[in-house]
Length: 210
Image (cartoon, rainbow, N blue to C red; front, side):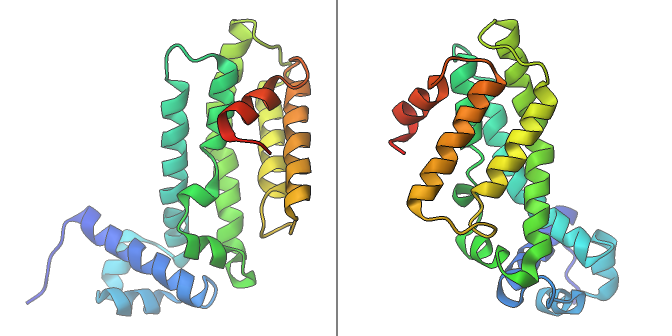
């Protein structure tokens, strides 16, 4: 007897299995037929939900990015929190290691999963930029800081910080990681024309010593 499942249930089954197979086999080596066979569905059923393997990959990536986006959006909606703290907490909400399954994160750095890795970074920048811009504009309105290019500065900051702190791209020891973080925070202070160590002090107070 053929089992008929609700749309979202079946779609999530496909995504769950695809994510598992991407971890085990790597994105490049995993085929659509691998996913179909493991889920136990007809080829037509798969193509009803997804047009290609890359579309499945996009959906897997968006699952994790949505978690990060929701966390950041909750933070910027908190009342009675100044823009400086909102900005720092929004950045901390982006810690990918806290959001993505460890096995998937480890495998993401393998050569065969380069596309997965690239898509995660791309989606993080695309999704988080407008959220951070809202905080920057709030700070400008409240005269907490000034910023000539909110959108462009946030894009630059996100690309630089996500790339430099990505262990799959740069292998840094703990000392080098701390230096990079200090430099990134210093750059942010200059972008927003705030006093030196303004963000650094808050980072240390709320998130521990670097």
